[in-house]
Length: 177
Image (cartoon, rainbow, N blue to C red; front, side, top):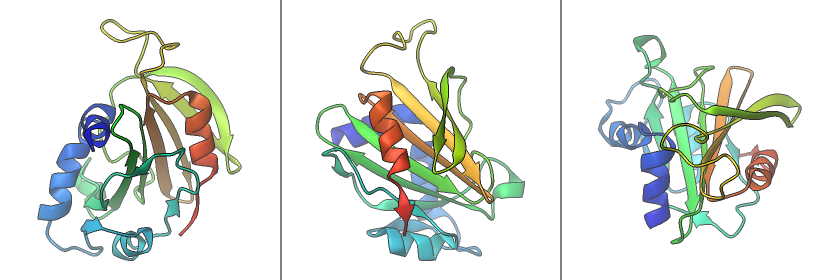
């Protein structure tokens, strides 16, 4: 559970506030809250979700979060769904999906690490590295983010302590709920 906390705090700083919003937000067009299954989260979110098939020895680190997309008033009726997979060691994978067609959180500037295909769609790999106070992009313990969009659904998978090949395989192994 410690790695899940590290992932939630450091991967995207606003994920922790999203988790708070998930439990405190008023019921709008879609439900918000914590859900034990991907199917329950999908029913609450009101749009088609993807779930991982490969978690590389990591286990689900708590319930799946369905929260309001709080980046602007325009997207407040949209839903952001977050699932985390971690171990007690500092390694983890997170998937975030929303129906706002863009990010639901303010992301800090990251270093571009490459462009890849994920299920036929162009995806962008970035990392929190090679800047003052951050480790080298070749270091093992960095945060990486892979983002893509399709059909109004914006997806991001992120990792800590995992190589880019694991992050790519995690993303490419996603299947419909």
